[in-house]
Amino acid sequence: MRQMSPLRAGRRLAAFMTSNAFLVLLISLELLASRSGAAALANCPIGCNCNDETLVVVCEESRLDVLPIALNPYIQRLIIRNNKIKTIDSSMQFYTELQHLDLSQNHLVNIPTKSFAYQRKLQELHLDHNKISSVTNTTFQGLNSLTVLNLKRNYLEELTNGVFTTLPRLEELNLGQNGISRIDPRAFAGLSALRILYLDDNQLSSIPTTSFSLLGSLAELHVGLNAFSFLPDDAFAGLNRLTVLDLNGAGLSNISEFAFRGLPGLRSLNLFGNRLITVPTMQLSGLTRLEDLYIGQNEFLTLESHSFKGLKNLKLLDITGATQLERIEKGAFEDNINLETVILANNKKLATLEDCSLLGLPKLRHLSLKDNAIVTLSETVFIGKELKQLDLTNNPIFCDCQLLWLHQLLNDKSNFTQIHCASPEHLKDKPLRNLNADDLGCVLHDTRQQTIICIIVVACVATIATLVLILYRYRKSMQEKLKDYKWNKGRKNLEYHKPISTEEDCIVRGIHPSQYPAPPHTPGLRPIPVTEL
Image (cartoon, rainbow, N blue to C red; front, side, top):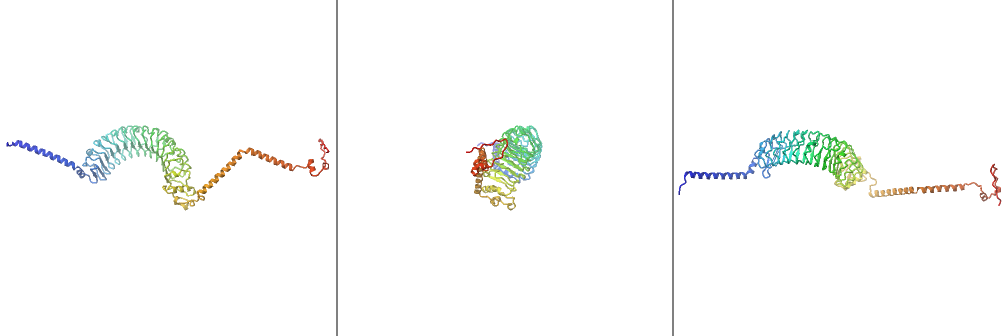
């Protein structure tokens, strides 16, 4: 056998060692990959919960002041809420698989440019309850898949042109509870998919109509708790797909006649907590598809007849906390035959619901009249048999026979809330349901007796009416007969009292005419000759 040269042997040995080293490296990498879960768990910060099966990391109140850098790079949900993080550093580049990131309730002051350049799969970003004072059109660069952005309760003061242009798929944007007083006309440019926008509790003094006109897909707009005071015509022009409009606490005292024009599909309108002194009937009448209306905590005194004219599809009406409201007039809801729920609660001066004010509502099932000033209630106010819920609690109810119908209704409907008497004194705090007709001072409480009396009264009235009608119809003939009767009676009386002056009378009385004294001679009168038989 020929011996191998030392050089050749050295080359073979080197090749063997190299191949073995490569094999060792492959095995090591495989082992590392198989133990990545244990390694990730080992790097989980104190106070955090890291789950490598669900790929979720939660760090709440963990006293973190920087973002963790050694977490599993494949995590999809990272929730670091209520910590002390002040900025977003470069460690974000390691978590490219993130779909949900929550950094709310931290100490973030600003967001460096391109902080999210590697989060192309991120769908939800929550930065609320921080101290962010500004954002630009580069702040959110890279977030092409983002659908939800929450910047609620920060220190933003203005929205510049095109600030959200890098978010083409954004559907929900929350900018509530900031200090925004200025919105550039093209601030919302590029948000063609936006469906929900919160701008409530800011410092806007007027509706940014021009800015809103770019949001053709918007379905919900929340702009309450600002300082508008006035809504001009076409205030929401361009938002023809809007279904929910929230103007709660917007400071409105005046609404132009055509303020809501261009909102054909509006389903819910919140005008709660404004300064309206009358119900804006004319302004609302064009919202023919409106289903829910919240209009409590305003300053109107009365709900007049046809207050909600035109709202034929209205299903829910909430008038809560209207401190000046005193009266509901008959026909106030006459145009709203599809009403299912009416809430007239916590109106401290509301004492009068006129008869039939809630009649003509065949679909009414839920009625709340709690915390008002109602003393008594007529049976003709509404039809209680159709109701599923009735709440009359916390009213100064005077329990007497006028509420016998309500007592019977409460016994028929066990699911109705309990009603306690406020007066008279001997019934105070007693449940109306537990009383009887005698307790309420009803003399005729037997239904059959009442029915019989009603029948007798109706029969008497009908008889009298018939007699009056007959007398009226034959009044002329009866008047003639009465005249004839009086004339004939008078004639008989005259004949009975006629003096004895004729010959027959005398003969009848046995006096011959020759024996009757001759009448005195009257000049100018010729004597009447008497013929002897």
